[in-house]
Image (cartoon, rainbow, N blue to C red; front, side):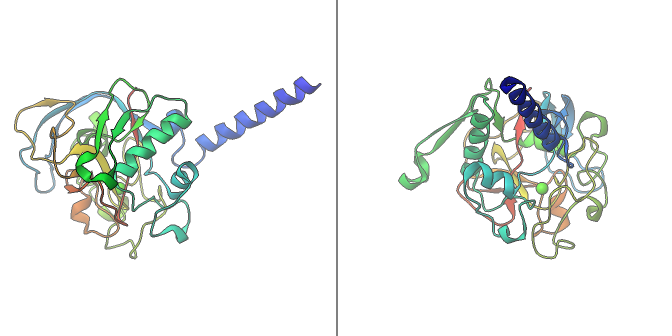
Length: 275
Ligand SMILES: [Ca+2]
């Protein structure tokens, strides 16, 4: 009898977990992530506006991309604190005011929670000076991570099926797919409320900027496979524009950067995983 009750409870719990995962726009397999098949695209080329030069051929291997930016609810539940300026507007707003290093720590914490291998090794501490901090990425580890800049742009453009078709992630009209300074009413907005792109990924354009792995640097002109940015640098790249920026910065090709210690109420993250 006891065993039967236990089995019933276990089934209920599994059902609840399944329902949680399937509910809402972030649902579906692989923890709310979309599979992005590998392919080759012209990174930096925008058919309806200015290119980011030099636009060049980039090949990206298959990966998984979070359908939604990390929310305040997810962050607070895992980390025990919510740094967001807009925390009083509900847990479905994207988390912001997280540094690149905070984002790295979140990815590792989420991997450990899920029984996966942490992807990042972190040494040094910002309090002992920024130069003491180094982060290395173990590409063989199966845990959560930040996307590379190339992965971000490839996913934003809808992957191999829809490459380069739109200025923004999911369309040519910023208002249909993105929260930007012209329509956000001066703040973040609940994730998943605008139309997704062809891969079922939301909010890449606008809402909050998203940290990516790469050190920011000029694009090389030659073709690349799975590029991961400059070998070293001063700033990390971020993508997608935000509630606080004009829609031109929400274009799929637009780039910007901040130091890895910078926290800002228009800057959050989205997680990726290798298959
Ligand atoms: Ca975004």
